[in-house]
Image (tube, rainbow, N blue to C red):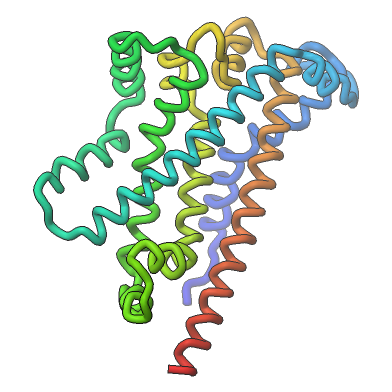
Length: 272
């Protein structure tokens, strides 16, 4: 077993400092009394109060939340269906084209994706707003869900589904009652990934949004261009806290589901 050397410890410390030290500084200065974000003038929470009284930020946050929930849910459904087809359907006419269309947004620059969707919406005469942002986010988030679910379906034991079919289940019932509960951690992970990507997206949303809908990343970007304000630090701190709580919660849920699945598999093996 290799010893943990000073070089490894220093490299690890510098790496974590590079990643998280700016966030820590941002959180500290979100409690700064001064309006100047680079000058510490004492501890204060007044900028959080100012943030919650800023109706423009609240409206942008509400739009972002709606878009993230709807797009991630639709992307999870479509991505799970696409992954099932790719893993279970075998060879069929157009499989290469289908898989290429599914995975294309993974390697496509966001500028190209946003511009192509903008031209599509203009071509069909669709007014840009929350609906068009949801469509755009669903388009690029679906492929990520498909990759996550496909990796789980590849290692799935189809004998469990076959046993359910032998016991009288229809294919849909077998998938709903047997397959879906087993791959649920992957489906949840795909939803969380799609939700995070939607919350974070700026480029595609800037192409597909309209005057009636402004997402939070677009609002933050517009405000930062005029200079960083303490309200931005407060908002960023809240977002970091929400993401941290979400990651911890998702990890606990996934761990509990994995433990329950392992227990059920051991019980099934003993009764077999």
